[in-house]
Image (tube, helix red, strand yellow):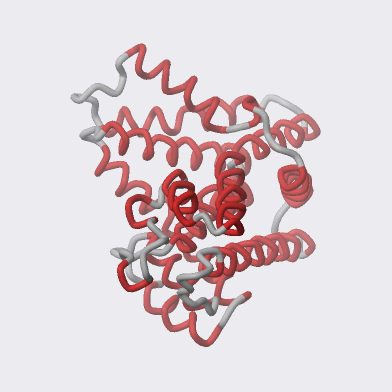
Length: 283
């Protein structure tokens, strides 16, 4: 049933734009409003209260699913996955980025890249040697991991409650970072633990569907290292797994190549889930 849910959701998500009620940001904003109204996360709040708030939606969903039959479980889990996976706004902005690049409008490309969180280093009109570390293509790979690969892995391993837990934690991290909350550093450390295994599974997929011999040493070098950040690991492995060149005249070359790598990796993850399902490892 896990595989069927994934196939249904990814097929629909690819061809149909999501309205407001099918986006995780909508429901997290409602949750955030309740937290703000009750002042649960003021500056004196404890990390344990934050952890309870992150886990609470998953617990409630688990209790709901445990009281229903298998068919309703399947329907609700599929609907939850539909809400939690993907990001329509990011996909729309990326399309605008490509359209601006095709027009040769580098200033618009930089603005679209910044809208996707690339920051001040997104000025792609600068020559490659003047840009800061971390390319726009690597940023897109990271966003693909956060909105597709990681939710998919959490759903496969822990079901609908697992993907809800990951999405709430991810959105909570973004919120605390925006507000510079005192608990931001503690949540960053928690997210490093949450991402530790999924990021290595995703990076393994990159080297299997990309340049294996070049990416393998990097993946093996970071495999036992708990200090490496998830974003740095996936950026370096993806860059090694896909041959890209800094082209000052075509800002879409590197992003396009790494996005294609990420899409191939999603296909690999689906094939892996299929094999595990056929072998009886997954239900």
